[in-house]
Amino acid sequence: MRLSKWFSVLLLSVPFFITSAFADYPTRGMSMKTVKAHYGAPYSVHKSAGPVKKRWPRITVWNYGGFSVYFERNTVLHTVVH
View (spheres, one colour):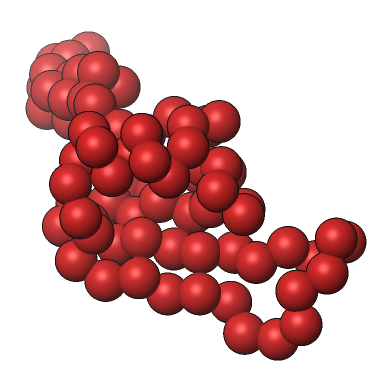
């Protein structure tokens, strides 16, 4: 009985991991120009408030439908899947 429950949970979770692991998202180090050329214009853009200095660069977030891209200056830091 335990093996069948484990097996059914495994079968239900595999498609999620496969689709999220091989999905096409911006990767760390890409430039803003490359992201915009590949994914188009974002739905919304949010910029960090406050002073911009060498030690505190501006963080920009581009929101697309299923994911958000975080930039430091003009370089991708992270991509968050919703």
